[in-house]
Length: 265
Image 1 (spheres, rainbow, N blue to C red):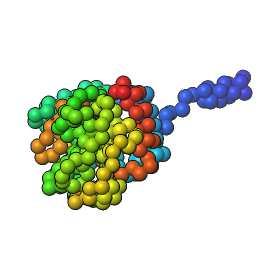
Image 2 (image 1 turned 180 degrees about the vertical axis):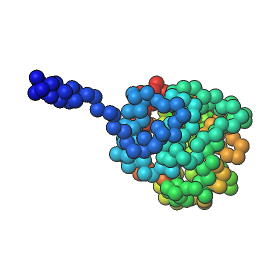
Image 3 (image 1 turned 45 degrees about the vertical axis):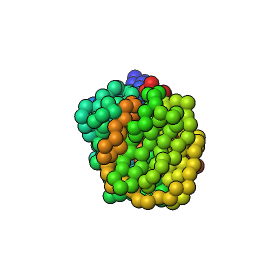
């Protein structure tokens, strides 16, 4: 009987489910959340971080926000370092679970406290990119994300002429490329002083040769651009850092997988 009992206990131990294993950066993110996500969401977040690391994009980011989240506090956390640059809503932008934040086009936005000229590690004068995902299909010339004091970096998912507009680390005329919809992942990148490009869902749609001038000293904002532009589209994701040379399609795939899982795509 002792042998049978021993074998029975051993069999039970083998059948006991193992605790899920999460990426270390995902664990740090969970620890910063005031309301914990369920196991399915935790796995999704961890898998997304691993995917971003596998693409090589994770290490090139200074800040990264998945604002399409299960809770308002979680939506404001910087995935790259939850102890820094938490988003702060100003003038009542609207949060929707698993969709993100939406401004009013007049005064509301989310401030990050991240100053590209001061805090940028990966974001440099001649190597920079900003990215955003919106669920809103609309035409609005106001910037959806960006920063701009003296020098400007900003992104408009679709303006009144039906084009993405972007500008990176300079002043002057924006670069643009025609798009059928504002929904999805948009980005503007500077790969070198005279190499500026616009991207939509992992595909390059425009390029320009305007030289860089300098990094913005104003804070990076979502649902607008510092110091005084305000957008109206719902923002589900935003990030900033260095350019993603030859990683753009894989980056889009990783973000698209997350957005599909939460229902924002």
